[in-house]
Image (cartoon, rainbow, N blue to C red):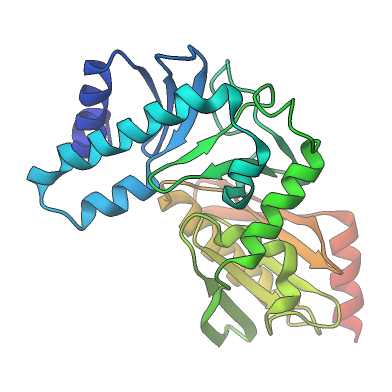
Length: 287
């Protein structure tokens, strides 16, 4: 979908331009805006605004967008003096693909989670989710890792995921955990809060934001589970507006490691296991 085919994005850019704001579209719901007051770039997410406009008549969109831009302007004016205490409760982490497009001027606060995915610090404001630059938070009393830990804790303290589906598919126990459309993937850090972990951890997929697909690792059914999860992951990843990873991961004891890369050629899907997970699968298969 082009920008002109997205009525919300088209109207948002028009209203922002009228205020002298420079807007660069990163994706359908991610924009870079250069603030008129500070002159520094903000990366913002339109998820919250989009959900509000979906519930409102089209003739009210302009008011909602202008309210959004008013709040953005207030934040832009205050950003250089904004303290950690003022936004502490609004800090979150989001899971992103490592190779996502990021504006050149933005250096986010981030760290690797596992090969292919990372966590990034965001500020979840009432109408927008904003990505602060590392320079902007450099004077705060907590370092990058501590800020990310705080963002994680705030996600964990939020609404838990719901076990929306659990069934045996092609001989494998597959569970689907779903929840907040912005932060569900972050719950991969504490899968042991949910009844989806086996004695050897869990095999999981996070193809897109909003849900985690999980198989508890107990026995040799991991072979069938890998194929089911690979198919689900590739399908969701290909269709998602905010894809995360076309891969499978191994959760164990609070750690997340790559289990397999998923590669497609023509009509074939290849599951390329890491040596470590291959060894675990062989062990489970002998059990």
